[in-house]
Image (tube, rainbow, N blue to C red; front, side):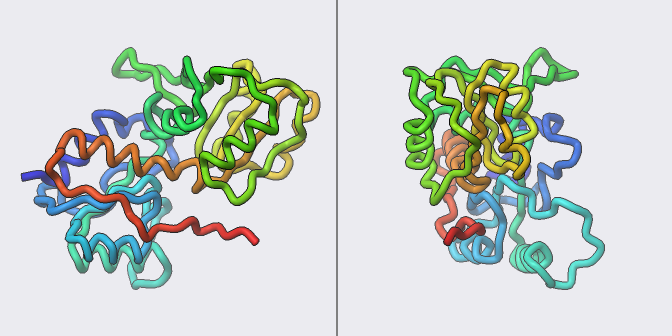
Length: 264
């Protein structure tokens, strides 16, 4: 018998909750820890269609990357996405778990998936933090090297293809070949200067603000490939982790989930 707590333990052995950022709400969002599981559905974000999918396939636990409850709520009356999802999940006894910035912070986590897709080697944590309770290093982003230097346009084309991007936003080309680059999936533009200090000539993230694209004189190109696009492979990470530990257990990746951002 596999329980909600078994899945929590499995994920947190790889990405301890102590690694999450102070603003985050990773961990068990909803459900009883001793509840026996019939199946797990994996997604990036919890939505009503995802919960319907879990119910349809008999999965009584959802593992997501982004927490359904991110900020405090004072009432649950079924208005808006968060409340509607909570009401339906409670009604159908579906547990909800989120592995968010704690999973971002480990070297083989979210950014490790991005690095593998691009072909980065010899990766290290971009913004390292020393664990207080162990010798393990964790932190935001990764920096590594391409196996072969590429021109900037070719790299953007590779990123667009690998991540199935409708479009890519980027700062001005520097005109240099790219050998060393840094990455931080999701909203990680705050680490641009750390990427530059690490010797990267390209910094790939999933969300950047307008003024951050003024990179003239910094010898680094900022690339925004989209939040959903850079984190979509988190689902495969969860799937591999759970199915390897429990090979005969029913675990599925959501097929109804879609990018909420549309491009014209």
